[in-house]
Image (cartoon, rainbow, N blue to C red; front, side, top):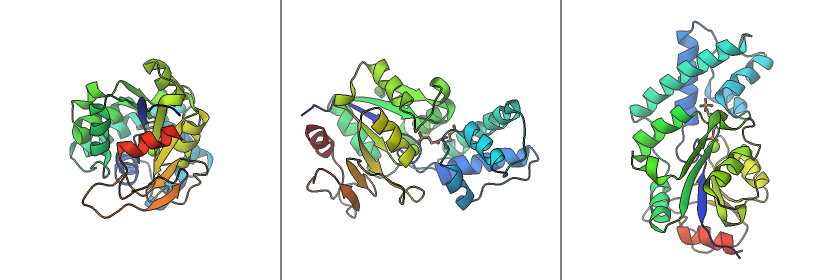
Length: 252
Ligand code: XBP
Ligand code: MG
């Protein structure tokens, strides 16, 4: 039985549905602006999401014969332009937070639980989402923003979670991860963390075997009840996910 002292949040797909209408669109804008023919449609992008990290995703598309081959420096340049387009899309307010995210963040913050970010996304993309979707005060409320190339191996490797926990001085025993994808779950699991998954259109059919709770949304009071896809610890009253549920998971 352990106390919940820290929650580490994934970003893309978990805080907000950024992939289809954010990252994907921004990649296509960078490709078009550079005179490339390649476009990533919604289905293709779903296949490419098995590789985390935008630069790694482009490299993977080249290897599978999608994009024309180019040197790594060119990939990095395209990715830098993509990040600028992504920041503009986020600043335009096109990507809202997922239901229940702000409620649960605020409840945890007020309860004195340490909050952190563990993501494969580029720091500049993360900053845009915090500023425009969460609010600037969250730059101080998150005790660590672990993002992007800060670790050599991205999810599903555990490195970004291990990095965040070391920076915060917390142990896996007292830490819970919030994720949306199998790569994220594998990363959290390999770091020894309990994990709650909120699926989305891209991840709903992925394998979350062993995860502590898998739901359609965090949900909110006064809204339609969430769909519970797996409930390892038989938690009760799951119309929406509360801090008590997360604490209950740690006690199992
Ligand atoms: C999701 C990812 C990222 C984004 C793109 O990260 O795999 O690669 O798709 O971000 P997470 P960049 O779910 O861990 O937040 O282009 O900035 O890499
Ligand atoms: Mg994610």
